[in-house]
Image 1 (cartoon, helix red, strand yellow):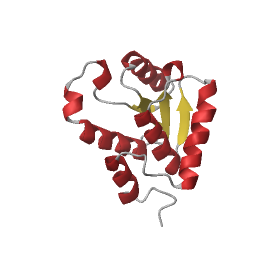
Image 2: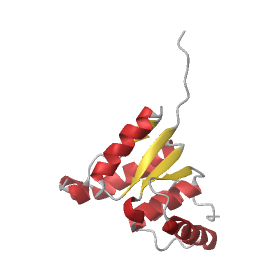
Image 3: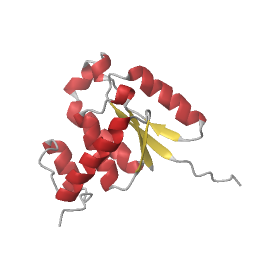
Image 4: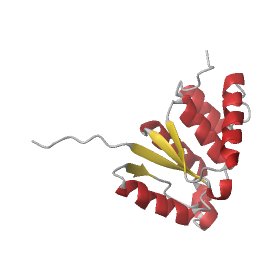
Length: 144
């Protein structure tokens, strides 16, 4: 009989302009005995077909976050863009662990802003497809 090993599932989040950092994170986290889910295409790094399928790819990425135990944010030089911010909000709503590549000063401030938006129910700033995904999936804590 095989021994069942429970591994942490981690989804990588961040700007696709950091392709090299994504690949390094996959390697590093895999060698730490984690199951790592990443993006399939790097639109900001030259994968032009990503733009034609952006909505599908974005929705798929939110599914990966839902399947995960944690997200790992690729925040090179402290950069966290809008899309990544929405992914962090989504992960927080699902009570996922959030880890960062770089532990920069800006993270605490960014998380404070995100937490405030969650508390205040400011969902109008989230793109329509993401907002619908959050609401339809029942993952918005302030949705009654």
